Amino acid sequence: MTAALTAQINSTAIDLNRENPFTSPIVADRVRLRLGVIDAEIASSIEGLADEYAELYRGYDNHDGGANITVQVERGRSRYTMGRRFVISGSEGRMFSVRRIEEVLPHVEWALNWEVVRRMDGYLQLHAGVMEREGVGVAFPAAPGSGKTTLCAGLLARGWRFLSDEFALIDNEGMIHPYPKALCIKEGSFAVMEHLGLPMVQPRRYRKGKKGRVAYVNPRFAGDESLGRKCRLAHVVFPKYASGATPRLRTITRGETGFELAQLSFNLRKKSSVGMAMLMGALQTADCHRLASGEIDATCDLIEKTLLG
Image (cartoon, rainbow, N blue to C red; front, side, top):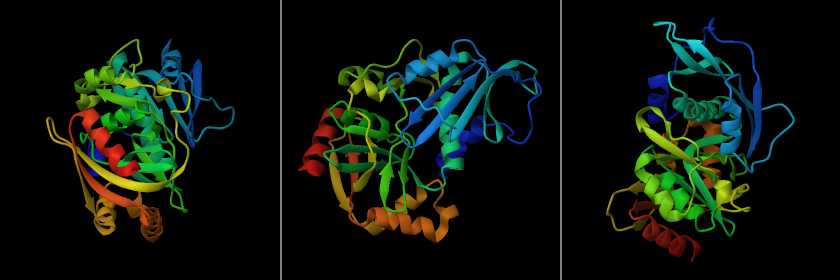
């Protein structure tokens, strides 16, 4: 797991191995969503939360079978202050405890990501956005704060298909599989979404830890064909945003790319030589680049001109 995500989780996570005696076992509402290769279930007795989550993913398919991942949200209390809390739990128990309702949905999304790391170990997992256009699959691996989500949104608005802005899930044949969760947009990029014509889901703005105020974009709102299918990796692009920068792409070697991707993998060390073989297989025919990302339109112009030809 990347150090950045580990630090984020540790900043708000609570003991996973102890039961919460203050959490109600009653579950009134469930939402079952098909998020690419993930069948997820969100269960809660908090009035309106299931409807709010379903609205965030309006237009997505549901599933009727067993879920790969289940996240439950209930009312509870802090074990230290006894203050009222919202408790978010996963497969191994409690994960997060938050005070305000506007913090709940972002932490549910966070819990889903954490559960993917735990439970979808058949894939090599890289922290990356993934987009596809005309059969060309492009991964944007990056640490948080590099601008990959805004970049994915810019390409989505131009007709690219969205696979993920969180995970590149790579199988044994080097194919990338979709996990098209809603795009989490930080407050500093709200105006960019308006410029791109991508509506942020109402009714509320949320708060997500150190990111502060955030909103969400449902990628289905970009069109009926906006969600991508599994594809071959054609390009790896490491983005780094700098305000006012002139967009530039620089070619790098596959060896340099593989070394850096190893630092951005959630489970490469655990998968050992098998994971390394999966990584090298995915990179076998990929072109690799570093991107200095600036103004969104100019950056997307450069990507399309260079990568699509």
